[in-house]
Picture 1: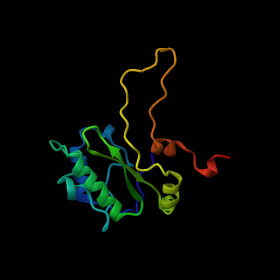
Picture 2: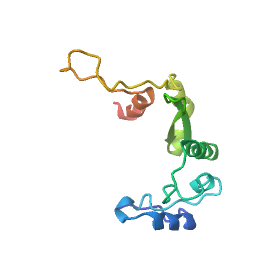
Picture 3: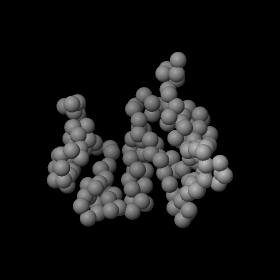
Picture 4: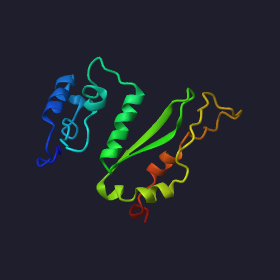
Length: 156
């Protein structure tokens, strides 16, 4: 199984807490069982007060959003997109994390999806159609349709 790049520095203290809090080894893999060390990108501990997923700590959405926005400021590879509000008026976000090459084309991606921010819509619990043999179309957002699109080089 592939693991991390041995040249990648690791935040040992944070990684030790992750391993301590993980209750069984099958909940993780060598790809995500450590936190890379960075001088510019903050750890979740900075905002949440402990490791993400620590026992007895359930952060509020606002705290998680704050951390995601810190990541966006710290790395050009992270983009936070406001996708609307809940029925209670709370903000909903989508977070895109990508490679360095793809992050260089954020403006192109934004132009391709002029519908951002996406308006939140209520999903009906019962179909309004009288013909129940037809399946209702699934609820999708512009962001979901964009994510499912194949990159230009794969469409040929």
